[in-house]
Length: 478
Picture 1 (cartoon, helix red, strand yellow):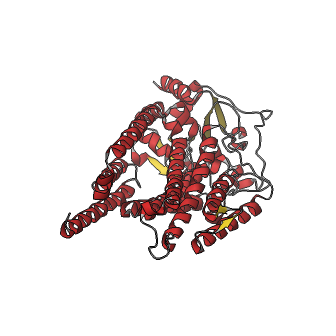
Picture 2 (cartoon, rainbow, N blue to C red; picture 1 turned 60 degrees about the vertical axis):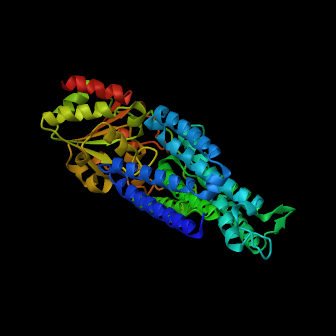
Picture 3 (cartoon, rainbow, N blue to C red; picture 1 turned 30 degrees about the vertical axis):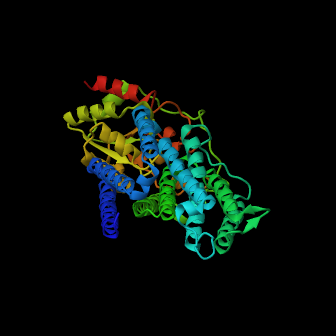
């Protein structure tokens, strides 16, 4: 290939990467609203296809053969297709956490390969024969962030999957341990950047940085309780983006750098918005394990009297209401009750009842979880409201219909300083004239906190599977 042809190819690749970056930005813009989310996904997929094609078309890739690359793409595509078809929406949060862990692990593996075989990555200094300083910075940061992302995402997956307690696991002197470990990692990075041969106990500083980052990733996520898990997911999403950007620097791939930076920055912004909406400190989230140190998870106080009702009772109350606000939660997702819920709402609207939906920022197990489920059931977008837009309406509402939501409606977040969820804004459903609460039992929510709302005078508990209960209500409405 002549110099002119080579330059033309470089220009074409840069142009393709630029177009891919624009498509990624349009994808993020589209994903900001349920109405445009499908177009956003399509733009993101097209951008990724363009970026991959431009990368594979490079002469250096051809020189090493395309068969292994296409084999890896095919294998990954088949696995992704199978997972996408089999995983239910209720398991999507832990699937996202698992995917984040893979991005983090990829960053660690690429950085490790660059450390072991720097000549293959073209990062050797011709004068000294050592890895150039800029690359040592990129490798150490990429490996550290990737390791934290991997181990933190594994813990998030275990908590979301129910393989580990969703309650905060508070280790003694955990903040001191995290601080010392962070200082150790920083010292290791500084040592490695200053001298490639830096070692401790005969082990290169690079490996100490990686190992320490794996450990601190576990320690940062273990103390975080279930009620705050959506923030953890968005935070790990940000980490995975920065880890991907680190890979891009190591590989010298502009598209990967831009993509990682977009994911990292958007995830950080989302985490900040959610923390602000939950009255949490963004810095304490990054430090890991936010919430009260002495807060103990409460157990359900089954000895307190509750008012239990039937589907027939609920149908009568709903049919005679003038306004209803539906508050969905993870229980609705587990029961897959969104379609029956929309059918119930349609029947009520035919009777002249005003129906709206109230979405808490952390309802479910990941940001936007409830919005996706309601969109799947074709609930009109203009009937769905965020917490800050509808919370003041509960006091003038006849019925608050809570289906599978617990922690996000718990008034203890406002009244009990010892509660693990204290300070988190909640939906003021208790201010409605009547609260219909669909739940299997009086057991605490994911955060392990008893809900005083169960025992209020204006609350009627509808015990049972959410889908079956709503279907019975629909039958009684006909």
